[in-house]
Image (tube, rainbow, N blue to C red; front, side, top):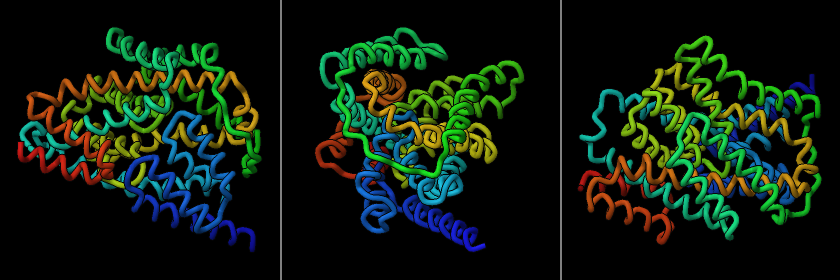
Length: 392
């Protein structure tokens, strides 16, 4: 009885703390990790500096939203699988609700006729340009990785199919094994979590099984809900290198399928920068536009499910994997490729559907300057962009 009460209290504590972070963590993944460090390491001392650094390293290694995966991993450490679920729910729900409300307000609105929504599209362009610039310095530095990034961008422009991005990332991983194995890693630290290897293998098997079977079921059975589940699950499973990389993946799925217009897509992406919590709740907005409240729930669960399965599935094996030069090289190649994918998306659909005049280009450049030179937080830039959109 005493152990049950203690476990329930631990789960509720994880939920309360993560919900507070979900309501206040503005600024994107890098800022989220700083908030987590202050709350979990410095204030509550749930784990030490070395363990936190290990968790961050693991979640940056995996595909998916790094900050959400760190939150899930800390919840797992604190209260097992229920704690991981509580941490995800608390951190995600506030921004997911906000994005669904925005989607309801957007329905029936002509995006092209509303100035502040055009401003949000300009903000989206500026933020992705800023992300490409920052990621290229970290993930595509040097001749080899820069070449992989450029090749990925060019290939995306000239060859665009439903599986081209997955094949590009896989090819970049193979190239990275041979060309980028000089990547160094920090010394591995011991990390003990309440996840057994049997459960871990089950999570990894479920992750791979859904990735392979959902497209087949979608082709065989059809139906809007299964299509939404497949599209958002695959998008969540293929995001390497940060939350902004989800933009080209989701654009191909929801705009290419005709579920959401390009204008609504970009307006929502701009609005996602103004809410706290994970950028992946952009999926909640898209799901609401595509399928109402049920679509929002399916899209939100589907895009975050790969992240949860991968965290629970890799924690017991992380120490050995991190020490492998083959694994480090593959990740270096894949990270460089996603910089190229994001560069391709910066032109199409962002530039092609947003910039229609010199005033648009000047406004986007000014917003980029606020991010890169003045270092203003994204939510402030969103407000400025909405005002600029009304003015121009």
